Length: 318
Image (cartoon, rainbow, N blue to C red; front, side, top):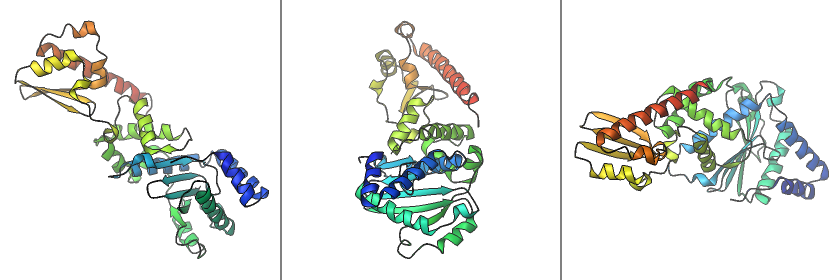
């Protein structure tokens, strides 16, 4: 879907509502950009939402769009489901005080946001959420929502977590991530979470497909199995294809996403990254004359990849 220019929304509000509303809109937006105190709360909710969507089955991820501080009256986080023509807006309040109250003003902002979404984003249905970190506030706020908003707008609880580790351990986030990376390792889960968090903090709205594609291009190694395309044997260099296809029955191989695994005599197994294989120089490849030479090369590449992975993890521990 086509994303909407900021100035277009400002111009629409000026024409449809008033100049005063346009100034209010811009003040809300600027206040959100300057809200460093609530940034972690918003970032962690968006991270959780990104993995929740990515873990779905049979979903067109090009049509699932996430963003923060997209100018509007309910503007902290948005999720556009272009496939179902629904836009979800979240106003985040990490507070147990009056700042997290559902007010008459917030009801008015929900109504105006709905018009913006319909007329500017061309979205048929808007669902606005007041996102709060206090469960008692949710109970109180649900009683304050006007009748004309109750069917679509609501107050939603999302606990504040002080660290990324805490977020992973205390929410379903860990399960979503494990589904995408096919690993139960805590270090792999942390690594995947930090990759996506880094992409999201660029503060632009983009599709979930784009978010994970960007993370893959930044990653070494790339952990997201679900978003990889399965390679074919011709994605490997010719010299390797010749050894694999002409070798004896004692050598078996399989391709799984970006990994090539060889098994020798049913008991020795080594896996290497396809990209790493393609980096082998022609001079080095020319020395590979036998299966034994190939196994030694694979072991060297695997050791080098492991060293790079450990180096990357140690430089950015949570």
